[in-house]
Image 1: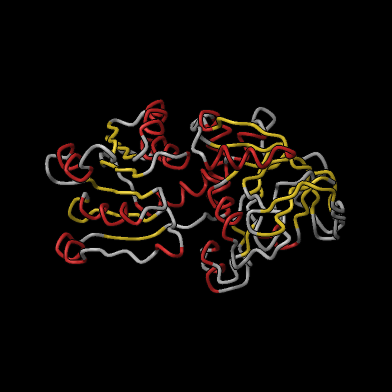
Image 2 (image 1 turned 90 degrees about the vertical axis):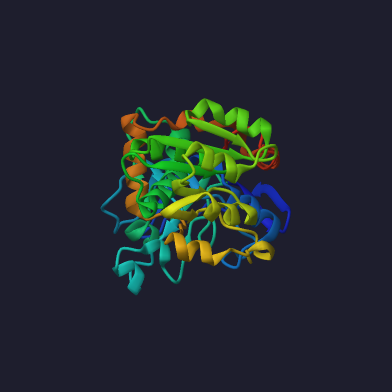
Length: 345
């Protein structure tokens, strides 16, 4: 089969590799769509301790099943499926407690397990038994189904932030994830959504997604503007959907007393030490937390939201590339030229 193989930092080569053979407990998938995530870009440039090169990366996946092992009963040949990233081991204390995205082994597609930038993908026993695999109806395209993975991450994050009816929500970062948060936050009851973005072209693009207020942080005092929009009180929920240390520092300044501040976007390793005025956290009684990945149940809910039309993920797709053009796909994703970039193996 043809696959894009990450051979070294900044070196991905499209070449022929052996097509995986289905195992007794596994499933072989013909990949039809795999979206490019910011995590893929970080792995490409800087690697990851869970990714041993050479490896096939990519974890926002959709396709159909072409072979099943003799012990597999949940799936059959021809099933159209969406596949998420985080795979619980199913056995540790966190997985037993229903917190598989906090699994200490931390399995993931495109990390320890080969990912979706290839014509075929083997799902092993652990993925088949415990992973985020969900059937998709015929009216849902593979492109849409691939975005169940990032949408599932949004659901996990906003569930942890406990968005309530009438809340004002600030989203710092207007990339594909940030723009997805707009729709989900409103579905959960937020009545005012404020988007903050440093890049003017990106902010202008994000205006199609229906937030109530858009703030250009490169030209405005973001904290002052948020306070102005909230009668001087601050927002009920602040979500940093970007890799900016300054965004995390600003988030607590624009938060209302007893607000929930969600550090959703991870930071580069060399910039992850952030100075915060913890007295503000103390006196405002802020709830500061993180959000990482998603559970299989979130992935399943994301598939349902897409299938029902409750969340229109087509609007978050801006580019399509063949597997042979994966270099251009990564450039498009990294250049912030649009929203999600889809690769078709």
